[in-house]
Image (cartoon, rainbow, N blue to C red; front, top):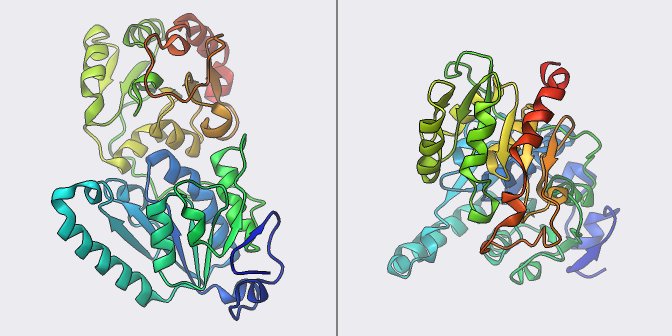
Length: 356
């Protein structure tokens, strides 16, 4: 078998396959996970981290993460070192010299670690290059990844379509013989000091794409018709949207948008009765924390990136064009035509699930 092998089942002899001296899983003493962003994607990768540490409790695990998302993983007991990269700055021509210097330092540092195994979950040219230049003898990734990144791997598996991101990532762990039968989300310990007084639920009115955002007036109608306090959360880019909602629901909502770091956000989410959210990073955090989610989906697919686990509900409009995966749309019917009454009625009918 060649060093660029594509497998559809777990490798049975990694030493022979990749030309490295490994004795089963015992050969993996130091492992690097490459998954820089985004919030939801990093959370989706946590079951892979859990599987690695369950199968290899003595292995040293490092993680490459983008600046701005390191708060999700900082201090995680399963991670021995974080490599924080300024990937957004690398795109700026004005920072070319500093970027070259930073990349050189990163690659020298990674190579000095002498990793046995690198798993690229991002599947882009940049992450593939990081994987290759680590110098690890075994470099694992998806054969159907984008931007020519598969050329950097010497062991590959098809990620596939129509499969949730969590299950897709776990395929890489299975490929090298790691047991993935137990799926758990090992989030770092969540502090409880910043939670509002219960009962309350979380509202996430923002999303990275404008086409994934439910109309502001729909959120307002739901909040006005539910008995608990609504806690609005999101990033600084969502302050305007959340402010409009908070002004229209004064007295029955609390606006924490842009006021928490990532661990503070997890803390607030962990104490909620449920979450109402667009397809967003906080939605995945809620699912990982076993907080029921009422998710609003339009241009994206809940099969691929919906809330993972039980006791979640996805709401869609009955339109033929969705999911289209477009970031721009003149009508956004797929979001506008999800009626607030559906969510209001569902919450009232399912209080048993929410209180269990």
